[in-house]
Image (cartoon, rainbow, N blue to C red; front, side):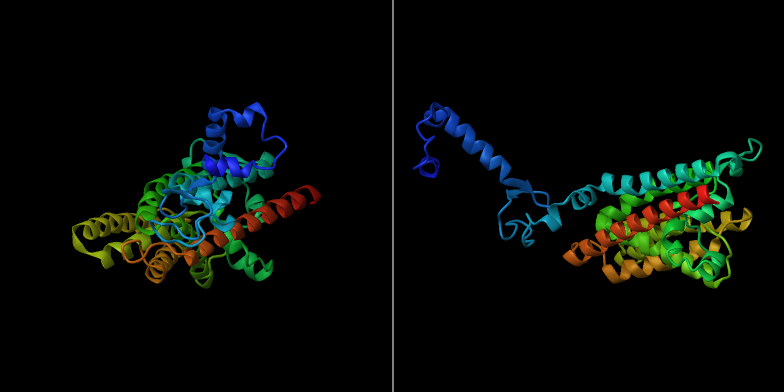
Length: 311
């Protein structure tokens, strides 16, 4: 109580009934304490916002804006990190349908083409391949293509796979590393398909395959019963994707293979949680991938919409 009384000493409101009432003083102190408390962005334990370092996990300046902004808070929640990717994919799919207008395919006899955006709208929004990169000079399409899909079934398959694999990646690597693997792995997959001569390609499957690649590396590196189970399960996933790509025409197996290889490489470079906890470098890379993707997609939608109405 002495601290509270000193803080009001000399204040002309000090004798007001609100401040002289002991119960009101206690309420004021409790409110102040709540406002100065927060969950550590790293270990999620209750700490003081002004702590120079978390007393539990020892992360420095846990109350700084860099670690507590809305994006960082969203990425600290595994479900929010996954939803961020999922909703972005769905949003881009809806925009591609809107830009397609009368050219949307309603082929009920072919589920692979049902609700298919036009190739023109996909090109405007950032599909990738040899043509967009070499002739249109759209190197940024290596990012945007990961959020475009050719049909309702296409996006449904990829988002179901994302929902199943991403929680496992977050559990073993962390949310920030998962986002980095997803973004950079998708880019790596499309770089390989570019050098393989793929003219026009889209889809989140390269990025999803990068998550599989990271988990294959984790299972093989960790070993033991848990590691072997993960390696066997994800290995069957990888084999199924490869066989499916051979059986169904138009599947970009180069993108799938490149995504898996890039994901495994990034998994090796950043390490998993049992080797080392997520660092500030991991957080910086993950947030940079999220912000960079947001900027690219925003510009892609803006330029694509403008070109759609002007031409």
